[in-house]
Amino acid sequence: MDSWLEKSDKGREYLLEEGFTYALRKGDWKYVKPTKSNGADWMKNKQIDSGHRIEKRLFNLKTDIKETKNLAAEHPDILKELEQKLNDTITSKIQH
Image 1 (cartoon, rainbow, N blue to C red):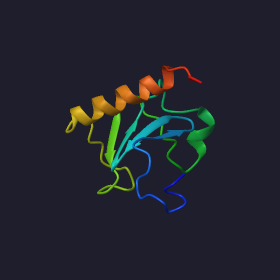
Image 2 (image 1 turned 90 degrees about the vertical axis):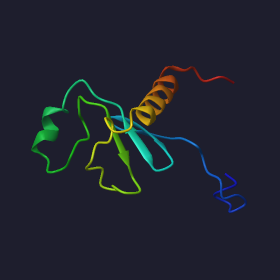
Image 3 (image 1 turned 180 degrees about the horizontal axis):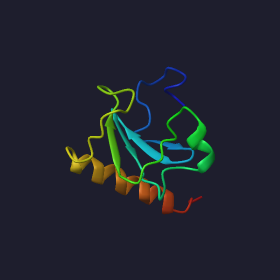
Image 4 (image 1 turned 45 degrees about the vertical axis):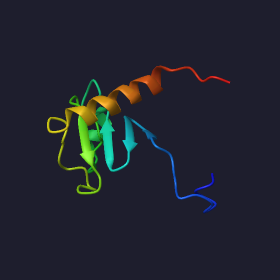
């Protein structure tokens, strides 16, 4: 909230994206959780990328804003960190 009110320039460390797939961002990095299929049949007729893939994906958004180069094999340490954090986030219970 402070960063929105310009009282701080520090934002969140992680950002969760949720749609038909899950993704987690940290800094310039974005990890996209694999899905069990390549998407719903109705999406195949659309001229958009559904984001569904069966492989793990890692992108550097600073150098690849369009998410075209999967860097998962080149940065296994970053992949492992973001994958674990996303899995922990999905499976954790909200604590009050």
